[in-house]
Length: 190
Image: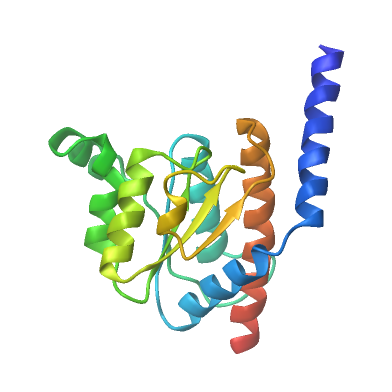
């Protein structure tokens, strides 16, 4: 067990060091989210499994607060309404559970954050394609390889790893940094 624990910590540290060395994607993503919020747009967030949890976490940081008092930012995690997920999954198929919500809730000027460790989750891909067709900006959070969703993104954060746990850990770190930057921008605007 000791060897596995140390290996996981060392892999996390290596991914964090790689992110520290190349974090250039974070600022433009934060600026785009802040601009969307300041223009009155909504931020829709989707993902499966751990990425669904990240979606909820990001939406909560934006609607509530990250570190300081400021106006609420319109954000919705598309993984949270079980009635929508199960009815759309049943009637249209699981690969359309996020696409249908983007169609219902998304408008030009809004933004979709598409989270997929592999970068190729079919339901996240369909959501990104629908978002682009409706005039939404799309920001992706993926593993190092990018994946099938990457070409449908305006901006993307590629975690510096291909190991699922490390990708998810870097997504969480990047999301916290971005939420803090967005909060600063929104707070400064009043």
